[in-house]
Length: 338
View 1 (cartoon, helix red, strand yellow):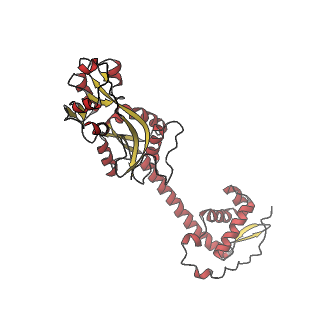
View 2 (spheres, rainbow, N blue to C red):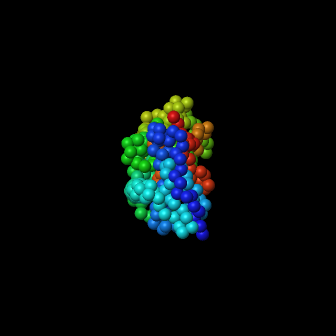
View 3 (cartoon, rainbow, N blue to C red):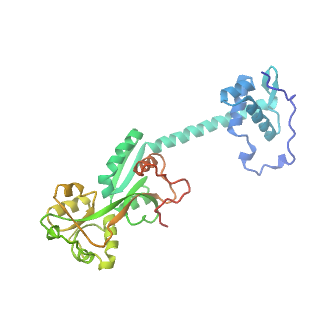
């Protein structure tokens, strides 16, 4: 098949060509695809064979060579029925092209190594309820997707999770509460309900009527520490009812609050997720509360303007309801604050 013939004529540079050196180099240098094609022509001695090797049609290859010649202002390939050979200028351009392509290959290998290093570990920070009752299942599923990724989990209250993310100590976080902590973006991944619970011997366990918000607010409770999502939601829910009384006990973990309540020390407020087994076994009893909202959003969070990538994005995908889209590039995720 003939490669065609252009007679070896050198295309005339467009007027003003020599004065365009102020333009970005990307406007003045052929793209990598054209340079790779030129190298294939030099190696194979045929534009048709070069096109087949690169998976493009011969007309497309011819068009790409002509466009490169117009851009450079010199003929680089002399096409004839016997095949294609480089012009003198084409031989020089091919030498330079080889260096550019080799540099691009080194660049690609370096970026690939960076991605491998990023994907080799995942640092997750999560508030207590999510860390204890939801994350284990998500991490098991993530291991199926990324068996070579080492995962570390840092558990703490919502304020601690935010601090780790802002301090670049975690790649993604999970919190409970009313809104997204300052400096972070986030997306709601679910909801949780807080439950007022007591030991079966407590007087509230035998009440038939719900307790009032004012009574709940006035009663010393076993509570999580300030900065926790549980405490934040409870403070907001009872703000219009006199605010929380001084805590009976203030403890730094869900497990400790639960153990104190089971022992009969007093009423506690905990995630329904955290007390499911105790309620089923009647070690704790849920107490109804009238006219107060004790629900909270569960969120995935990350530093503002830095969308999750790699394993963090995969983990986020595992937490989302089936079919729910992830935030797109440049999109402000649902549930963010300023």
